[in-house]
Length: 220
Image 1: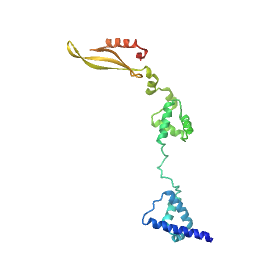
Image 2: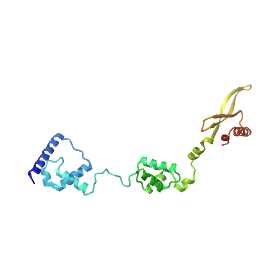
Image 3: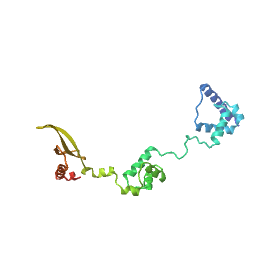
Image 4: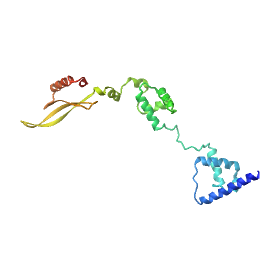
């Protein structure tokens, strides 16, 4: 060992002492990666040399880290629970969206689209996500029309109908009347079809014929 190397070692020892003085009684909190790095170098030096060096932890602790972390092939990453990690929530949402907006896309087609976006996902994982959300495979999915799709396709032709009541003063006093109305869902336009004291079947049939004659949309 040349003189320069001795000076370097002497300086590092003194720097270590200064740092320990700054720490005082405070305890260092090291992560697994830091423990691994120290343990690898500590094992190479051996207990006798470590005893002669003023270290931030004892030689016994360093060698114990080596036994636990190196012998167990600890790579310093965070602890993982048994089994495969769950797919990130945002990716799962993306898979569901792709399946709902593209009813003829199978597992492999969705997998390919994810790869194009930079997400590596197994075909089986895509299948599990869709099953978890109650989404059928592509062949069955493409043959069926969801209620949401039906509404979106025919929204401009759908009309809702209902009754409400009004109290009217007549010669016989205050009486309740039924008011039939229709509302165009796309424009929110309201049409009043009629008012009657008793809304029986004959009256309703006449109102339906009257409404149908106004616009093709009312036929729906």
